[in-house]
Length: 346
Ligand code: KG4
Ligand code: ZN
Image (cartoon, rainbow, N blue to C red):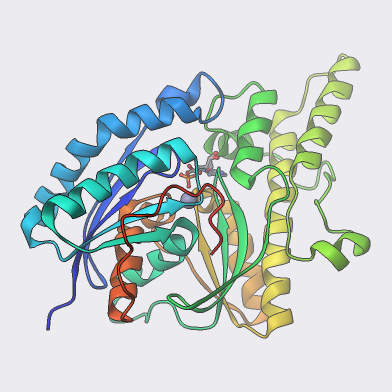
């Protein structure tokens, strides 16, 4: 028997992702982003994202099929993200997936976006490095989520350990970039601005890291206090009439985000006796985050996996890959009765 040929549709935020896999083999992964349309608003506008998905879906599916050199009729199953994410955006992908599955008379799998991010690692595996060993701790950081998960089995046993109580880490980068007068998306801009800056110049707060917070929110994150602290610091500096040392502010802010992400992820590894850490989400593009994670994980005896960035940012291949795993594990397909669930639990 050959592994199932699955087409995955991802529309939970601003990326229209279509991916095609055969089992664990990645055949195509097309991504159309409406990022540019959101830039002037400084963040993703749900209505704009939903409309952009509607326009991008058909050409993206055509492109993914062409790149994978398969026809719609060849597919064994359709997979789609049903949550968490922006309800209107999710609905566009779900509608398309249901239509395709019904028209082709193929099974349909509704899958969880966060678990999809973890599944990305399976597609990144090769002969030398066995992908996704269990158990693993997964740290997912993007503009929409900041989550720490305990993965014992991708298809049956993923536990949410903690997540952000307010802003996502990427969102914090976007907001701080904005207050420094830098464009959206803020992550890459902060990175550029931080060149030559001193990460120790300003000690910005590490959210939910005090002993009293750690008792209740050991694996949770909070970035809104950090954003406010940066805003205050910049205001006070401006009030003195001195120029704002943007490189130092950017480097110190980034250090605070990276420190708290890595510290909490490694605390989970230690507490739960898990010697593996998987990173995912668009913020993984941050070189400093990867470097600090690799360095401190090595000291702690934890191995780190980082899928290629094209599989870390939101994409359809991870959704198809997760469905292929579910099929292999004997999971029944979804009925047509499901809808978008913006807060879908893992
Ligand atoms: O996963 P992703 O592409 O999509 C969504 O969240 O929809 O992540 C985008 C987020 C944005 O908030 C962006 O500012 C952030 O990832 N980001 C970065 C970097 N590159 C992108 N954050 C920090 N450093 C970066 N180099
Ligand atoms: Zn995501």
